[in-house]
Length: 330
Image 1 (cartoon, rainbow, N blue to C red):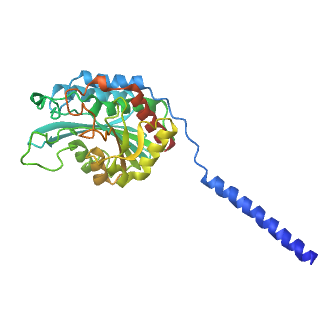
Image 2 (tube, rainbow, N blue to C red; image 1 turned 90 degrees about the vertical axis):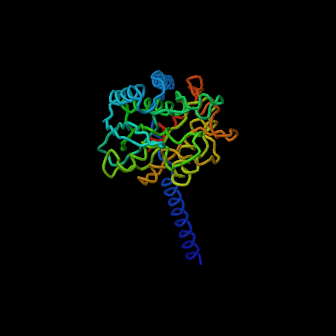
């Protein structure tokens, strides 16, 4: 009996040790990956890039301001060490106008197979069709938050990528053109589909690299306003919920939870939709959403009041640092 007892006791101890070892092994396997040290995003720098774009005036296709700003963005990406790809195309607007458009792409480590794409639109709207003064509805807007803010954040990220590249992944920064030339509110007849996001529609059918593929993409649109709130945009949740959660959880961990709201927003027709549909790349749209607004956007949206006065460095820092941390963790 004693021998049987000792045998049973030894077996129990052995099983216990194996169980503890298994638990430790399992714990080690599920332990989160160590976070890479991301560079410090400089909000003052992003703010200056936004101001530089605004200084050109409204960046409406077929204008001198548009051409000059496009040259500036190309030169900046080149200065920050990116390999440059330029897509020039004649695109047709809702009213038949031929738009001389230019998609500007900067690639970091183009030889790497694993890729992340970051994108924004760099044009501004030719119509202030939500301006409270109807006489302004056919006047081009400056588009400081709606366009320039996302580009400014990405230029600062480009500057930092030149200094310290994330391990094992290539980053592509894309500035899409002719996003904001969609059918204006004052046109009520002969409505056409897909009049917005013409540059990203063109790129999705004609990527700058044949058979281009990225693990995921992040779109920045209206990311500079004071007290901005970024809800979880619904198209992003449908096609890229994993990456939405990654971004929003990272923002929370970095202390930016007041900007990145853990609640559903609305669905927005934006450049990410055409990248998803055309290239099957899951994409997240970080876009300021105001659930109390009639339009869902800021009071200055598509008005002559979309100016530098709306831009806040704290918001730029929250967005830029969150995106940087995610791509450096990759």
